[in-house]
Image 1 (cartoon, helix red, strand yellow):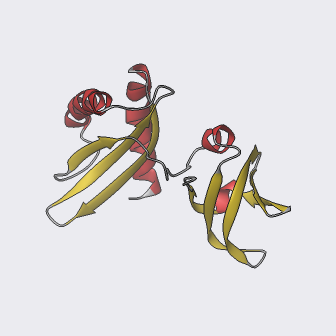
Image 2 (cartoon, rainbow, N blue to C red; image 1 turned 60 degrees about the horizontal axis):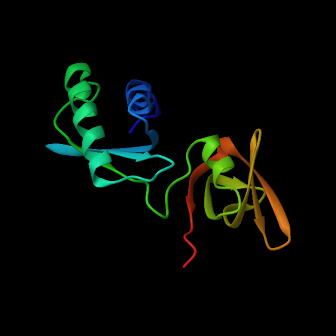
Length: 152
């Protein structure tokens, strides 16, 4: 999915989802051949139930039918972000401070592309990750993916 297309979908759906009392935590759009999938990951402080996903799906489906931001046919899936959720917004890096994370960069920065450690937080413009006794300041704009690593 192009960044522009992702931003358009977020701009369309995020206010509607927030109005329903949920956070749009992440989206994935995979279009292939005759169809594809738009996945919306929603969250709330109370957690997410199957009924929450169904309510958001009904509401968003109607909006997508009217606005039609995605060409062709696709399936809409709505779920919770899960235990190994992606961190995509600066607020996520603040909210999940203290959690274990894996961060992969878009390219080598100071000789490294991967980090795994404890999330310290977000300090504009960097995400802070502690590995052992060392804390790394990772430029937010250089992050390709960041995920929570569940404590098991």
